[in-house]
Image 1 (cartoon, rainbow over the protein chains, first blue to last red):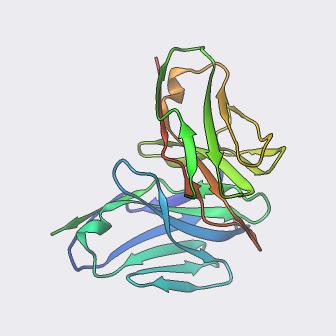
Image 2 (image 1 turned 30 degrees about the vertical axis):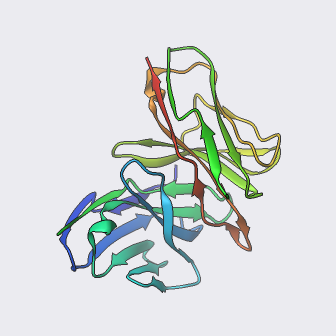
Length: 112
Length: 115
């Protein structure tokens, strides 16, 4: 299937610091890049998404950047709080087939 | 309440015994899909459907079947389950945007164990 690499697999940050997660993809026919947050024992939920015609998008403490030339996109969480602790997944959607491929996930732990 | 409902939530079965996991959404979404979640592998798409009577293979379709006879329902069928299909399964539905499906709304998950 379509390969989406996500790094790091685990991330521990001090409360108030920033967290950055990076994803790369190989299929240039990708135009939609969502990020999902999954708390322990819960279902994944969308936190932010970006389309290929946009380079950056912000929503309060969360931002996503996209570099289509380099085929990578990143999630930035600023001023982290304990409730940000969760597993985060990046994903990409194909232009022609609409298949959604996810990264393997990043477990983020925010230390109080 | 807008939601995606999967049943059952938990299932333990034996190898080779056919089973169906149901999925229903009440948001009139065109796009529905099934994923399996395994440690270290993230979410992998099994099958997806762009609309009624239209289904396509995802990244890991082997051993699974689906059907989309109605817009709201998208059942996942395991004709002959095997232990390597032990996993956490999620159904999701998405509205159709101008350039393709957008936000995926996930069901609560089905924990399947095949012994």
